[in-house]
Length: 162
Ligand code: 5GP
Ligand code: ZN
Image (cartoon, rainbow, N blue to C red; front, side):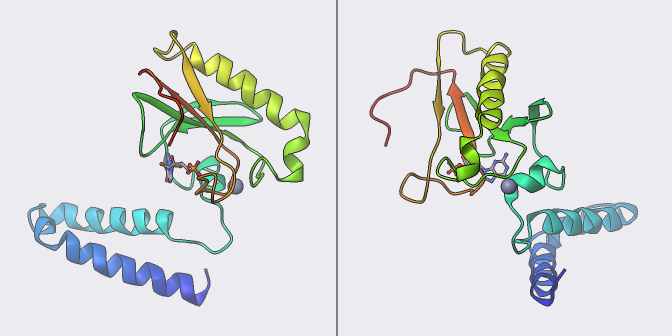
């Protein structure tokens, strides 16, 4: 951890301790250390470690996620901010920035992703249909720079998308 990250984590821990300050006293004293440990853990997980990709950290298990599928090439998990009753993110294990990244042309990258999507879609109540979305670049709506496929379903989809 560099000095910036160290400072950032300390500031986050202090501000979270302020936020939960009043609630903290409601925990029995024997649990208060455990509350503090959880705060430190949550802050570490969400600190912007320089050069560390969010989805790579989810793949490594450093950030918790609700995983629904994993094999050698692909991880799929629930989106933290779902836009439909089913909203999963299907992510190649290998770090590839987006569809324009030359590494994305490797067929051994995209074929497993689509096979995973086909397999996963059988396990969710989306037999009437679903949508797969890939945002590419800032104007394409991409906010996390690790190639990912949104798998959305469980409601009728409108067109055109916003
Ligand atoms: P994008 O906007 O890049 O196409 O999609 C990024 C997606 O990642 C968003 O739908 C956002 O809700 C989701 N996301 C951002 N941070 C996290 C996180 O920490 N965990 C999970 N599960 N999803 C996240
Ligand atoms: Zn990554």
